[in-house]
Image 1 (tube, rainbow, N blue to C red):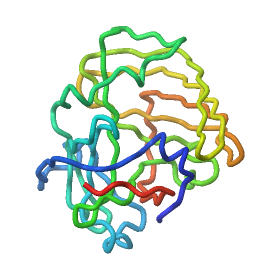
Image 2: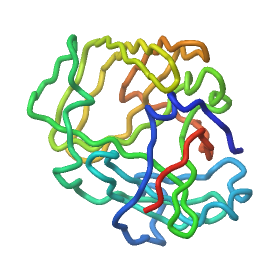
Image 3: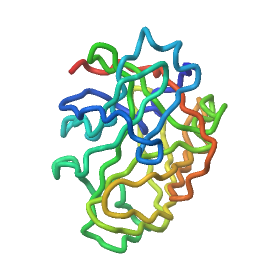
Length: 228
């Protein structure tokens, strides 16, 4: 099922242009894959998606593909590259008054999934609690993929206020962390709550306790990514 989410909430999760690639690795058992996805009503997107990309980066640093796979009727499997180039690592995600890091030198990279047609990325692919992509976006949680350059534990609560001049919104963000990251790739979950269409009072909770039974969905957002 394709779903639409507001720009601000989506911007917290995704932006997309792509460089680089990683070869597909067929014929592995499902347990050997970091991501083993089956998108809800996935075959209905065959005309819009032929590949799935896992990527890191942002509009300042540029973007880098760490894994890719053929999109077969909604099914795809990805193992990311063993490491992430240093230029895409940052400590910004873990910095904030009220947060404690077991190793202050640690840096991480968040990775996101997108669907592409003819090398033109146009849709996000998210793993979330079924039925939760709506006005209260991702209240049931979204699976996040995090690369860490070393073992690190992140705990505490930080609060910040941001202003979106384009949308005319004041965004109050409370971030709660109880996260143990191992060196390499980690699956985590981030819960979003208290998101409204009038203003934003957002609570984020990041943890390692990833539940089973989440749904893979294609998301169409109110944005237009740059072409590679």
